[in-house]
Length: 267
Image (spheres, rainbow, N blue to C red):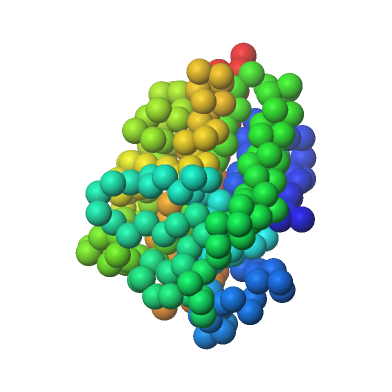
């Protein structure tokens, strides 16, 4: 299975949380292609994001999370490798051959198009198909549903921009992927925390948010990008329980507020 489903601990509510970049596995059949030093500690991973959000089950929220590393295939990229941004930043491919600092991750030139197509079939489409299935099931219970894509990033990635990232970045594809009431609820909660916050800059939502955010069909989507130092130590290598617990309180408030808004919309 290319992903893991974590069922909620109580009756399901109209939110699905996705964690597409927490995967760390590389299939045995592919490992020989990679630089051993690079895959000894896979960079560009959203470390521990699934652990950070594991409280959502107590709210009735189901989670889907990736099993395999984004270095196998990036689930948040366009399947045809169309760039999501055109502002000069480094954009890794659907099947990356370098990390965000432009360092090669393969011993050879990387996967052929035939190999990429196989990965799309084996890992990429199953993730999208499962999300589509889960949202369809939710819409049989609720008119309005929310897809929430959870991410993290190093506090500084020079290939994307020189300055540090804010702590929290909400993406809704320039307010096109969700109803304005949902967006207003999220921005109000996130902007009132003690963390620095930006909206749609420098990230406005990846391919998952752009694919599933269809407010005209009552399917709404948000992406939350988080600097790793918010919940990890300063080296961005270890989970920091104290920091994580602080932001989990704000995330809990975020989901409770989003649920209240959805409940109003579903009346």
